[in-house]
Image 1 (cartoon, one colour):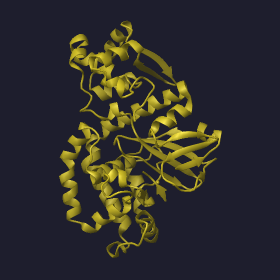
Image 2 (cartoon, rainbow, N blue to C red; image 1 turned 30 degrees about the vertical axis):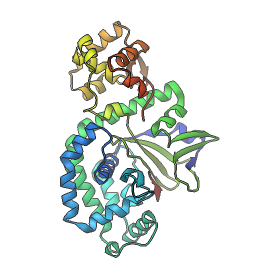
Image 3 (cartoon, helix red, strand yellow; image 1 turned 90 degrees about the vertical axis):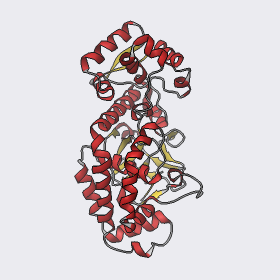
Image 4 (tube, helix red, strand yellow; image 1 turned 180 degrees about the horizontal axis):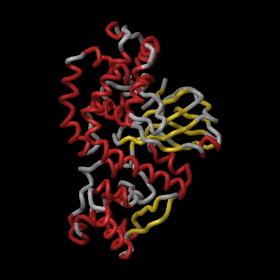
Length: 355
């Protein structure tokens, strides 16, 4: 397994950031894999996968660059997500937070050609194909990422950003209630976890541990549910990219059980279903599409009924289901919600070895 050694000050100073480039690269990985994790992703793939494949078919050099840059590990029978291993560094510059997409992509484009070729050899764990022995690889990669951003991410970015912000608020609240260990163990269950003795496991691949004490550590959510990688500027900044809370990302899969709909009404039931993860009224408004006043009224009724509680986390007021609210949602959905472990405060489920 891969792990980082860090001191208490580094962990205490870590933060969550949102990166348009990380969301774009995660979307590129999803397009390359063509393997949706939920109905929302499948609908998105159905809309954009033909255009992506047509673009690469018209530009085979860039298509080969993508396959090389993502790396291939494991059995050929495994999914593309399962086979992905060492990602070429220049494709995933370390997020800094508050950086616009244009600045992030400029860092991809500014990669020295020799460095890009060397990183591709690492990703391939072997020699570079002859057609990739050229100087325009960073420009090609940047051009493709710009296309993915403009065609497949930017049209949805306003909503995706709100979903990511909701995840950050939920994780931050979890830190205040359960400590960093509870958050780290839940970022990518089975892959990230706190090992004790100042060690953070970041994935399941074997490579030497890294001492990152004194550097900046950031955690970066993306909406693609099987995406995740790590990136770093050695000795300066380290990032762990993880999939955000699934109940937020899957719009199509957030149906309201019929029994709950009949009991509470569709809009109010939708709010209760969402509150398996802590959210503020602003985030509920963004994710549901309901007005702020409507959301506030629903929350008031749900609180008075003992189905929802609220608490303060920093500057935010968060809402989450009570035990009674959890039982009601589970009963209405036939127990499926409970089996997924979506109770309040729990989340479902890099050179960098970045899978």
